[in-house]
Image (cartoon, rainbow, N blue to C red; front, side, top):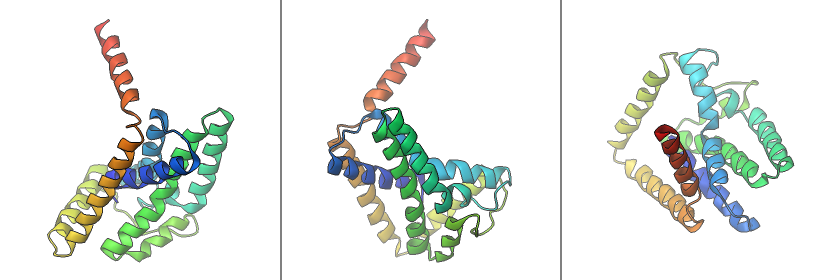
Length: 195
């Protein structure tokens, strides 16, 4: 699954959780869910593709044996410091990554063997070549473009439009959390540069 798809899935889950529990999502929660949804790939892909430390780009951080305990610790620490919503946003984003990858690989590409990767260290997925981060990224982008040329690709395109549209609609309904944080950051950087 591509980063924007993970972000959409995670945001939808966090937004629905916030609505059900009566929580308000702020910029920090939006940032936490965005980081949580990307976290497994930020850990596993460089360590496998660029450094050859991990056997696969889907291994340690994708494992349910790692992601569940890490999420519990993050929520506990965040709660301790009065940022429970931020902790839960990260955890839901992180935990959404695994079933999303499984669904995407299985449904769209018929690769149900990937389920083994989510049980690291008991097992791991297919070995990744250590061709470098950019070479591997280019490989997956080319595979995606080739898939889009197939007649059944309209299902994926419709799915993506619905997914991204739903996330955007919920984000707007939540008050576009994160925009104000981004504006403050840009203003701070601008002031720092002009001094």
